[in-house]
Image 1 (cartoon, rainbow, N blue to C red):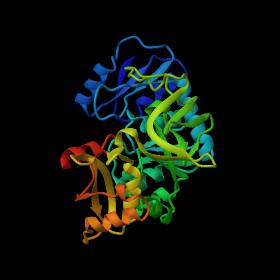
Image 2 (cartoon, rainbow, N blue to C red):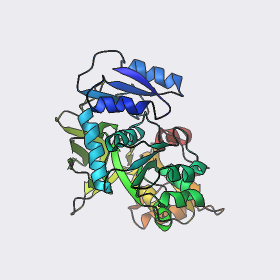
Image 3 (cartoon, rainbow, N blue to C red):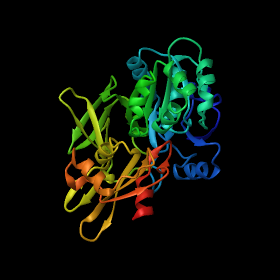
Image 4 (spheres, one colour):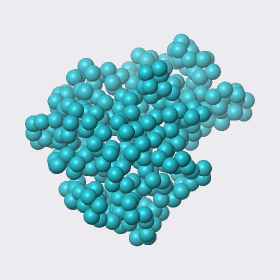
Length: 373
């Protein structure tokens, strides 16, 4: 396995074409603009050491601590993901690259482009909404797609030109976690066709679209956890962990809590390690965030737990306000209690200018817990 420095998209396209055709050895994409991170990944994931012949790409995982695990993705898994995506969206097309190619979401835009025989139009690794109209115009005619994270979509919708450009696309895939309050509604009002995706490096990217698994993907709920199976699942980790989430061949046991409704539509409720144990009860932050987000004074929010001598943990919220009015804690507690048990209501609220995020836009609850704990 050799490290490949990823900056501009064009040099990586022929490499991926060879990998998908089985004509090259495995690669480890690393960021060109971050020498420290590139060196860390190269060392931690043992670039230059032997690896199974069928592994095409090792994708670093987005965990906040510890040694990067590195998902082992085969050419077959990458191609299966690309084919299933195109089938779900209505056929191959041209893609806008707005995410770094060393993350799975950006990498899969490149893979889909290779599979479709098209060249993506890139505005990565930086993202400037002013670039969107010109980039989308440069995509030409035919089916056109983009893959963004929620914070990028939120920024684009605040600019009339960028929002109008996104509305011209056949689909805008949104991954990287839940969308901030009101973003889905604003996207619909702007005519943007949003497809919410769920997946991770270990499943070659998004494998559940708008709650429905892609063709060839199976979703199970085991002890409350989401378990994903099918052709897009990685072989395992470069640096295995215990317990191994890949113990059952062809399946990946996630750290996400979810449920399937009567129609088989998946609802992601939160992560196991984000759950708050307060007064002997378990509170899932994502559910509380959804309740808080319906309050008119809140533009965005994050819920997390901090140590409490009496309760074990207490529920705390950090909120970004949508207006000058600052709601009282009692008001927000009552608002949450309208739809959830009162135990889930935050006992402490902090006003912030913006929420901390990591990677390609995932909410960093750990940083908030450290700041306000």
